[in-house]
Image (cartoon, rainbow, N blue to C red; front, top):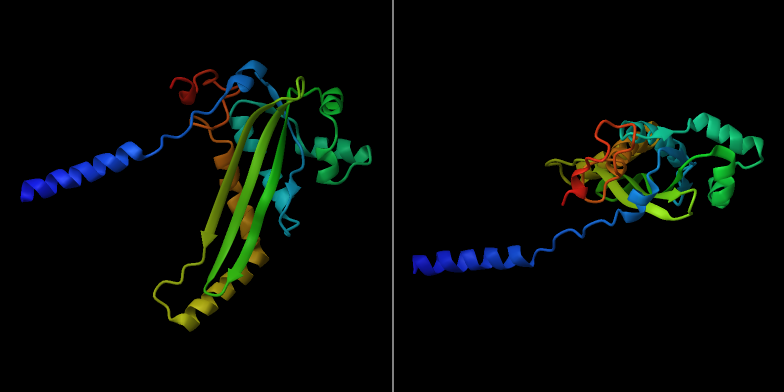
Length: 221
């Protein structure tokens, strides 16, 4: 009987292990053909109601991209260039033609980030802060999308073993504190770290200024 139970347990584990889906291999063909050296990061578009989101995400996107091995155009210079040409809104920047961006900046690729969620919300017994963003890298020579990734980072208030009243108070206080201090700014750094991580299935490839250029683990699979 004991042997039958052990066999059955093994069968169940083997069955579900066999049915588990392997992550789909990311197609890097366009990225490898493009071989971008420089990236123009434009002001993120924003679907959330929090106006602080775009600046927070943009300001913390430069470092991980640079560390990945790319030349990233200075954010202040890029924004001043748009403003001097009468373009102030992220939605208007997103509608500028690819050829025009190439002509003005001479970059190899442009990075478009869309913020889908940003900020703190209160839901009865829980307060949460979320940053959800989608990034697309476009080749400015061919207009092809060469890479895309979406991430979501969330942090919830901890209620511990409190009663209902304590949980309500904790969630409310947490939501107010997170809103005042803009907890989304801190989460943005984690979101960017995930967006522009390297050496994973759908990660951005190492750039030519990285000593690991061409040694991406996901390309050797």
